[in-house]
Image (tube, rainbow, N blue to C red):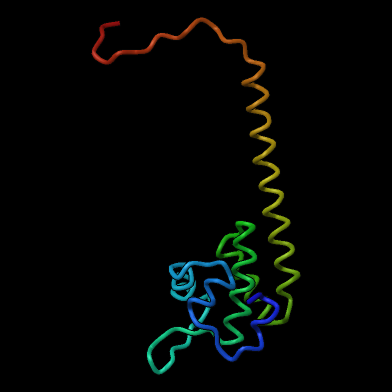
Length: 133
């Protein structure tokens, strides 16, 4: 099953949702606890996801791959639900995430350059506790 062909299904069980969206059962329950998705229950009390929940799971899975925060994902879901601007908000959130990662990479590159340029000095002595200095 792929994301393209699951939207027509009336329900998607927990194990299939895990496989389709690449999420663990724990993650699915966590998103349910946080109110990001609503899992329905069948007569055997097993979780299943209707088309609305599957749409939300698709957003969550995609945005979590980019390490978008849960509060930002909530904004995307809200924008999608309220006025269909989910894609627009998601693009903004992912662009901001990318900028943050680029800043982190720049800091790492700077640190690497400093370490590579640094000439080692005389070995430092290790401080020993209890030694009278």
